[in-house]
Image 1 (tube, rainbow over the protein chains, first blue to last red):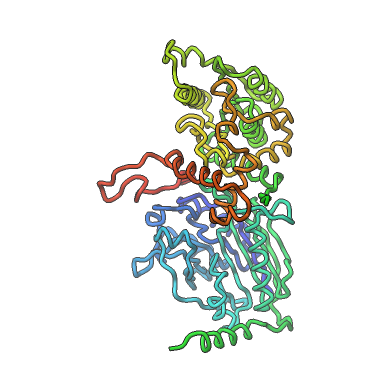
Image 2: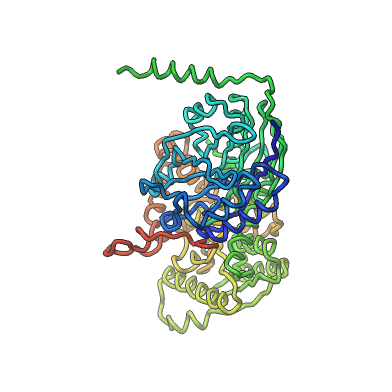
Length: 274
Length: 273
């Protein structure tokens, strides 16, 4: 199966959902006919450094503010991010998958970052699953959930062919080798390539750009093939939308990840005594 | 043992130019005003602002007091002319002296007053020119509390606040600040003969290495001693960081209601931007 994916490396306006929805709609219209899958970063409808805005701007799954997105998803599948007000009244850092004018799947961030935990606005999700799309099986990983391999195993076990990693990664540190790229970006690139190779699948990484109160999001969205090679790169720090054709036909490269799964079982059976 | 603090001046310049452009223009403003002392920090801040916003949008104010050295003044003019920014000079001697009169005032008290008069003028110019006040405090000063609260520490945005002094020297060379400004002994120039390193009792090289190890690397003081750093200097630095925390916070508020500003009413500065 072949598909064209679009990576929308955007600069959301902090806490302004109406504006951000409009921007999402505009971009969706721009890629109509060119692309089957449009991926926005984590919290793309809200921004990241929300503080108390987290509570103010949280949306339920069926919020009317989101209706325009349902409409445009008849032309292109859309992954976007927002603060979700759950039916349990908890707030989640969620990614929504819209397709064919419906909300097909909600992935809630499983493992909150230290900042998110410390402030205590968000609750962590407890479910991760693959999405059966018209072009293949896809799993969504939100930001630093990628740092927890045990959370990725279910996706690989269930046959995900693309891992979509959406993030709000901040530029920190200086990289010694590569001038012009923050250390944090190099860390992400290494991780993404590692997962692509371990799981033998495509990894689509979409990060945001822009400043929020001095926090600087580095962008650098990219696609990595199952061999760990970077097949396309967005620029660093600049808004950008790129389209990339992916061929999901079996590529003959076996996954090493199932060994990892066995390792997990070994670990559980041998590390803990009940 | 020496510690090498990682740094990439080209990358840093790129980020800071974007930072200034972005964090100024998202408020519907495209200008900044900056106090030029002739020192390295204000020179670097001004040069970054020119790159971010264009020389026509940068307003430099030279604000000498009668004790300000000739060299400081000359260097402030030099950098202002070199960058081609709007430049004005206001002698603050009459303002300061009309308050203190002929009294023999303790020099730190007078120095703080001078710094705050400069702040008053910069924020007045901010209103006049519809320009944000660009800060010039570096990370070394901010951590050690070597500055006047609501004086030189006051600004709208501060591009240098996460850079140690020794990193600013590298950045200054990258962006073409004249060598004499980079190499002269840093001074607040609030009284004759004052130098930062004389007052702090430690060189910036030593202070920055100890700060970097304590702050970024979270290395314990005892390990720093094992690494060869001077115990007394380490303790002095830790004491300065703690003692000056108040300069790095907004005024604290007694909690009475269910939502108190700064405690549980917390919104980003870039709200809706």
